[in-house]
Length: 145
Image 1 (tube, rainbow, N blue to C red):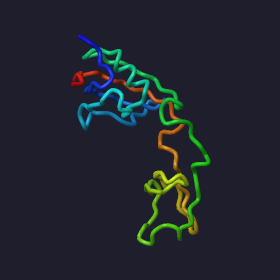
Image 2 (cartoon, one colour):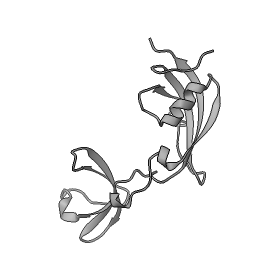
Image 3 (cartoon, helix red, strand yellow):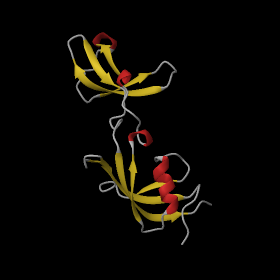
C-alpha cells in the first residue's frame, strides 16, 4: 500500500488538544474529513506526517505555537470606540466582528471586554500562543487523477 502524495485526497479523523489537554477540535461529531495534500488546508507538519502514514495508521503530532497559529501579539488587541460600531450591534464578549486591515485584507476580531465608551477586541486567533497536539488517523487515500 502506498503513501499519499501531492494532489491526493486523504480521509482523516483527528482530535486537537492544547498543552493542558483541553480538546479544541475533533471529528467526533462531524465525521471524517477530506484533505487534499498540497492545498494548505492543514498545517504543513500535519500534511507531511500524512504523507508518511499508511491507511489505518494513527499518529500524534506536536506543534509548537510557531507552527500552529503563531505567537500571541498584544498589538492585535485594540480598543474600538463604540460609536464606530454599527448602531444595531449590541457588543458582547466573545462576539466576532469583521474588520478591514490597512492592506485591505479582512480580519476577524473577537470582543473581549465591553466598556461604556470603547470595546476591546482581539485580532489574534483564539489559539494563538498555544502549543497543540494532533492525534490523526488516516482512513483512506484517494489518488489524484
